[in-house]
Amino acid sequence: MLRIFRGIFVCLVAFSSASLGLAQDGVSTAGAARTRALGNAGLLPKARDVVVEDIVNYHRHEIGRPKAGESVALDVRWSSDLVSGDEAVLQVGLGTALAHDRQKLRPLNLSLVIDKSGSMSSSDKLSRVKTSLLNLVSRLRPTDILSIILFDSEAQVLFPAQKVRDGQSAMDLIRAIEPGSSTNIYAGLMLGYKEALKNFSRESTNRVILLTDGIANQGVTDPEVIAHDSKEYNNQGVDLSTIGVGLDLNRELLQDLSKSGRGLFHFVADSEDIEKVFVNELQSLLSPVATEPSLEIEFGGGLELDKVYGYDPKRSRGSVKIKLDNLNSGATEVVLMRFKVSGRDSMPVKVRLSYFDIDQNRRVETVQSAPVSRSGSDESVAKNYTIALLAQSIRDMAAACEGKHYREGENLLVASIKTANTRYPNMEDADVKRVYASAVKYRDLLREKFRGELGDDSRGDTGGKSIIANGDFTQGNTGFTSDRPYIKPSTNCLWDGYYTITSGFNTPVRLHTNVVDQPFSPPKGGNGLYMNTGGHDQFTVWSSKVSCKPRTTYRVSFDEIGLSGGAEWRNTYEIRINGERSEPQLGGDGQYVTVSYEWKSGSSKTATVSIVRMPNAHSGGVIGIGSIQMVPVGVSKGL
Image (cartoon, rainbow, N blue to C red; front, side, top):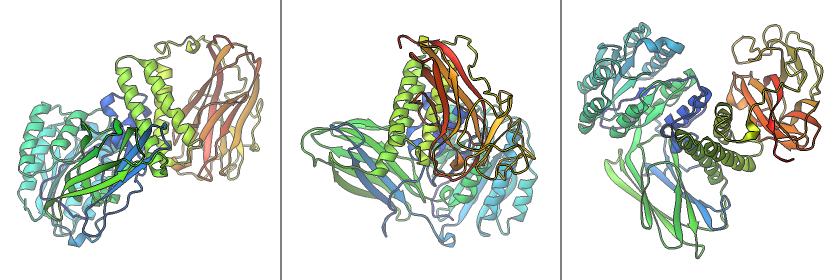
């Protein structure tokens, strides 16, 4: 379980309502998770919230594992088919190995510091934390040292540092934890350090894991003082990593603490993600393999560095240096750069990776050269570069909106969405699809919240009514067609490829599904169309012909929910009108999302409006659709 380090490691863990899905081990998830959580909450992020490298590295990459005697593998690739003829994309990849036999790993001296403030009772956070901690303790070895500290307005030692043995005493105490009052992060953090220091040994892994969801509001609350006193322990060899819980926290403090402590800043979401960190990837949490890693990329004449996606690059003539977070077991990471190319084809770059190897107790340097080729292509680089463009556009959008440049922010998102849609028209790649969905969500959020500030007369709401007669399905199964057959509501009526119309999807109109048993009625009222979308192929869910006005801009929208429990079941939709098509947009996963498209009628007096389910990698799933509307929002300029 542990192959690790000589210092103390502190980890602050946080939760939100967004599911992170299947992230990889050993890297920060904070930027990706927080960006998604803010969008799901209908909030625009600050530019500092959107950490491009976290989003790019959220998924596992196609990077080889280290060879015998190595701790970190270096993988350098070029791809030129992603950009214009005088540009090329460089990907520098890193990969670490998994630790296998936990009995051969260092002894563990672990201190758990648990936030039990009153806010931890909301959204059942404390209960989920306790469950995860019980799983963690059950996986410790009998000879490992464990201590448990609780804090709310004050801090107390619940379980003094001692050998775990069978773990029952510690687990009984964890089960009995109840929420309290305020949040004294400083007191809990300092007591956690001190308890771990009682058994500090350079032959052991000494570490503190601090779980909190809030902002310091009791005791020492000055972030500079907290960071200063924490760094005193860092200077003694005590390491710190942080994970933010929920949206209402001091993100800057947690990130600064982790940076000064040579650790990672994470953001963990719901119970699935808590289990991911504390159970499925516990080895990663407790086993760094390389500290203070850095990259230096040297390039000569004929190559000009145009863009580094994420990180904090330090540029100089002919080279760029990038400091990385510590690398844990089971991690893959990529750094993406775009170069302008002139001159001959085979100009090389030299990539130098340097890090402190914990196993070998020495600093290691690896060098690799790779010539650029204008005809090169690589599918894995293409995928990562597409994600980088989407992530960068979200960050740039956030910066533009901070300056109230909403139109500029929208244009940035539209450009990256278009590029991603061109490369992945069916959104068949789950990792691209996840970031694409965030970009689309923020684009739609801008259009909803800042319609006036976007400065486009065609988007001004005229207060028109929907021209779709039965968009709320209150008239039943009339006024539209579908590629799927209709079936009356009945028990298990959707076991096959049918749809039905009802006010809510619950007993007796219910399919076996992984979501909780509740109606999931359309959010704007009326009935809903509930359908089994089984099969991989494209088909028309709903279609209707309506009369429309020429030279008018219409907004077509509908609310959709996926009811089969899991992001892989989500469907992708296009809205099609008279042969024109919207960009593919993702439906919901256990909650309704709005899919929309603005269409200019030109000279048309009628419109055939269709909701089309695009080809899907998954073969099944139940959906609900409601509130289909086509509303005039402005007069088009010309045809």
